[in-house]
Image: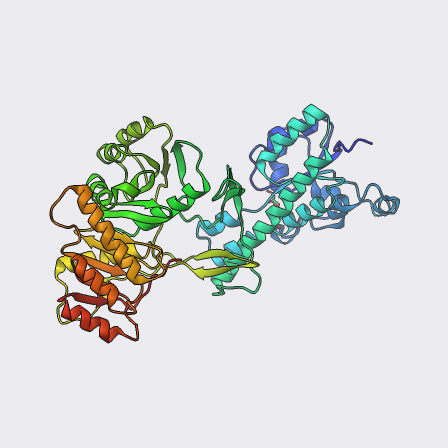
Length: 525
Ligand SMILES: NC(=O)c1ncn([C@@H]2O[C@H](COP(=O)(O)O)[C@@H](O)[C@H]2O)c1NC=O
């Protein structure tokens, strides 16, 4: 027996009416009886499509301001009744329940209402009850019913019905999965919003909405599968960005680009961040993006090759010409002017992503990390240290220039994997030590990287001389700080809080360093 479904009766009830009329006309031409709810029926009638109001079909009016329109046995019985069980067929006949073979529902725009800043009552009223109930009934009974929950399903199902004469069981299963996925993500969005307004950061049961943005060729490695999902928070960044040109993005590209755009958003002045393997290898502010690029590149020109470049301003021709002079995988910025776009267009493989706006570094939110059998969830690191938070702990206070560089370096540190040590001078990093298991090793690597940068720049004066140094967490011993002093740093910024703070402060005083403590740590693992 063929598993093709030839619908005879359809119920259409959609908030987003995109594609509705064409599909309804197609169904009507196929002789399908169309039932519909208030606004949908009105739209169909105005377009001349024959339609029966669901209230006329059920003999029950839409009541309670539309809170009850389809929550009646005639609808749910019509969707849920098994056509292959004589008892079901007999009961449906007994209770005057006509089978409904095709359901097209898209839900009240709850997510959009939240995103638009709707107040509590508006959000509550936009919680669709009847729609998800019908989707679940139809999806459960996919053996006999097709459920369409996205506007793009209209064209897909029309094409299949035209080509095959009906809707296959395989398609109905796929549609049912999409339907359950839709109601699950809808409820996840409601739960997230409701727990948020109620101050519950970690609700007892957590659902995370995910909308497939695209499949990826592979994951971190070619033997891993991967895809990228939007989480519905609307945070601007790598997921929301528009790709203007270039090859398909990879898993690692997305991860690194996220690190780059989140880091560059920290800075008020024109800034460039160059990322490799999720760590910045050069960060600089400048009078303009071109100057910032030059200074960021100088920090580690070897690692910058094949890197990810993020800018916090509209990219202009001057900056684009400099960036395009070396090979980069991805460039991301809020926007790019005509000149910049033309320059990048000559590099066919370069991926150019535009975000419109920058992510707000201070905005609340959560981040996740998967671990075996579960995941870790925490509020995002929205912490930002400013001058008022600093405690000067050494005899010498930092100069104004040192102070500016200290704040800059600590902001960079927040985006470097722990243990993080960052040397900076004149609003640019000059040595970065990332991800080492001991802080003194990170300090040594940062100093060594700075020597390499000095050599590459072909200058006599070591870049680290007169620099400042930032540490993402306290120095447990004086050795890391002494390594920084030996490299030429004159001032230090660190959270403080070690049992040996006094020893570290004494070492700073002995070396003539100015040191400030932030009281805030920026581990990044
Ligand atoms: N209350 C109900 O029984 C009910 N039945 C269907 N809806 C929703 O009403 C909307 C369509 O309404 P209209 O056809 O009036 O524009 C759809 O998004 C559908 O999911 C309902 N609305 C909310 O729960």
